[in-house]
Image (tube, rainbow, N blue to C red; front, side, top):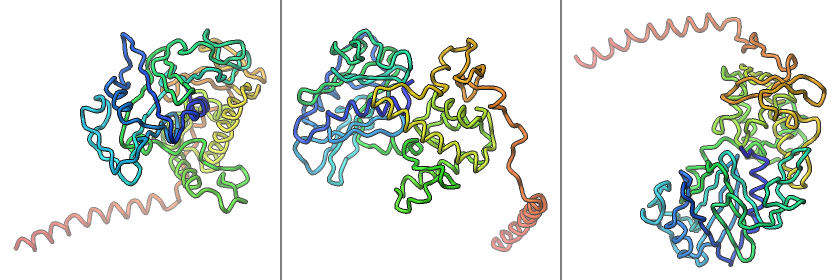
Length: 376
């Protein structure tokens, strides 16, 4: 499944579709077995009638969003129920001076965005570029539309295709961005944390982005001293951070030498994890932008042997286990599960707890007496 680095690459491929004057053309390529959540012919027809332009392309986690606005400004844009497919919330008025629609894209298991002449890379050492049969030796798409393309976007002469061999991807129109983006945890690329600070933030940057600082503190609070395994928390797109998938989670835990099922993570461990996470996604995004392979020391290059035995860059044997509902690659014994790691409670915690229970027991009869007095 494409994760944050790959989806960020797809966002950049879609960005040339942005225009203030040129209308966005959307073309559906029919198929006998359509996607479960996909644009309908009525959706496409409505977009063409509205003559929309793509004003921006956003990403949060693994979710992409193309912001569409009518070419000519109107006071409001009210969509009727029949204007959108069944998978879209309809009848909501978009006001506030920004008459916009949101075209939400999710890559699913095998989705990708391709454009003629644009190189798509995946970070592997042996094959840095997209090895699709529709690509030339340098990895750029030379046949358009490419194989498994089910949706074509075009602005002027620029074209991009949504390709999805297994058809688990999603594409739908919405008039409310918050119903999709706000449900996601902070983006893993926007934490703005640095190892220079004890808490993982940049202590020298007093003017750092406030939202990013809040995102870091939010993620930290969702990870520290939790009884859930750390990998399960990382894979949950709504819990601590969004954009993390199986290989990114394994890479982070490999580099900080933490077991995927580790629970009750300490404050310092969580800070180190978030710092490492942001560093990994930043390096990965930069490598894909340049068409380079990921660093040779990464576990990424050695984890694709499935359940077969393999070794990392240092010659350590790779072990595969189930964690967070996914197959996880770990190195033992460096990634040892520490079962004794639990939060330390104050010495008088039990006494204080007993006092609270006693107060609650005493409060129940008192409440009953007051009710009786009121009745009389």
